Image (tube, rainbow over all chains, first blue to last red):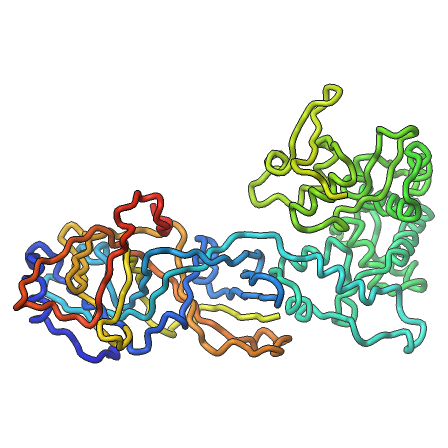
Length: 397
Length: 145
């Protein structure tokens, strides 16, 4: 029974129809009386605009989580995506009503007259719009770097109990969906150790990789056929087996042979990048040709270095004599689009699309291209027959 | 960080929800608030056109399929106070979400001419938006097909 002060009867409805000069025979035989619930109040309800995919997920029983950081806007997270919440005002009144049938439901409906008491549960002048956005993941690396892992502790005194985060701890602090968070953990080669997610100290990561590549070399294995079991047997005495396997997962692709043996195909590009990072992080810049020589020597025999492996990691300066290369990691640049472009143009006045692309790729929204981003945030010109981009505004140096 | 879980609890709350959009405001005539009060009568013509009688107003409209469905969030338990962070997912406050199945968009209207001896007494007064006369684009309308 609806909680109403009074229930409107058929006679009253008919009287109103008459005054309104509407004929009963022109109408479908279901009359609704709309009333506000006794407990109807705008404040307790929020309207949320969904996309069909989210709608389907909710109907399937999935949950959404709103995550709000004190200084930031709230975001809405499904299992796999993150959305910005923005209030949209409308000059119209939106009522949400229950117990109300719609014309399409009544096409072959009752022939006898029905009077339905429908309830207005609430109303709103505004609703929340969702806009897909990149999750705020910069914080993740920052949190994990509070306590990087550099191998099993020598003594119990080395173990610092604080500053370690479980998956739930991370979800509680970072405005991201779970899947996007997990994907980023994988990208930064983080590892779950004793229930907490840890990032590896880079030197330690290189140490592990060195063990693996040296073993591959001494066993004369093919890089695409590295057996897990042998690795764990041979390297187990040197490092925890979980870490060896983690290293293989980070730098290779796991697969099973027909006999069911677990193998890894080492990724040449990833290994070469790690070696480049090792070399570049120790200098402001390198002479390009010298770097290329040392770099090739540093990678396992049989692997080939290529400059395009450095995309998003380092930048080549072809205008200097001699040509140089220096470290520039995309994850060290600002997250915000405007700030990112500002930082890039402060570094270098004019960029070719090929050079700038790896540094703006992650800024692209769904279905947005880097070309579109450049059109929006940069000005183009032609220099020496090549199209270059520079800042639209004076750059703060 | 504040976290609120939103889920649809099957069986909790009514099944069929409808969104009705009106160009105007609802006011309580005697300042008693809207809660518990009758609003108006909703009819459909045989052609399926919704007709809403609110006080002196007749509103006509149409049934609209929402390109982007709406959901209603209802508070299930209170929002946490400052400092109540770090809760496991099961302990977080939950809001219930109800999906709005369809929308009636009420637009055109005219007034019912009423003689003084036939007061259409309604505790709710409906005020049409003055911006009715402005071109359609200047009003923010919910997305529709």
